Length: 270
Image (cartoon, rainbow, N blue to C red; front, top):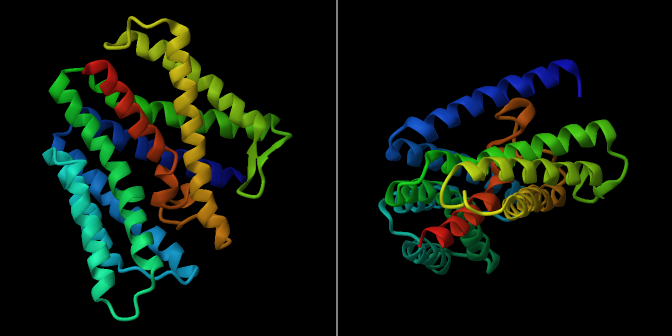
């Protein structure tokens, strides 16, 4: 990576990180929901454009409105039950649309689940923090872990990576980077979660195991998105965020870690 590219990546990443931190820690719930909804819609637009390259054409405006409604439902506490309504709309629209192909409602429902329901868990996590009165730092935890995992995997892989992880999906990812990401995730989880209930009383090796599991999900999320990008031979879903790629590229690793952390945390709170 060129020096200018690395500098741009650092600047954009830092600004995004600060903005997300401020919103998640200090902004009212509706502001967080609005941020998640905006990111969900922008990521969905990128994904729909990607599918169009593969000649899969979806109604982008309908799906964006439905995705935003799912985020709103998360803020109102209506999930997961509400999810059946937007999925039903997608299938009804396919029935009444002339020349609709069977794959159209299937991919439409996938967009709602992948880029609507999964991101909505961040809003649900914030709502749970208010309901159960746990630290907002636990809301931020899956993001901190994912960013730590990604940074460690990228840096160690770039410096010491020799063995390709899955070259058919992500040519630059290495086993060395993958393991480094898990190690850093384990250390972060063991040190971080010891400070907050309801996991403060758990042994360090148990907390490290949580970090490893979430770290693995983070990298799986990244590779999962790569399946679609490689299918149409593109590197990034867009260049909206410069060296960071598109809006979907920035949240792909979070789409599995945030829901997993949300449900794991609920097990200890209920």
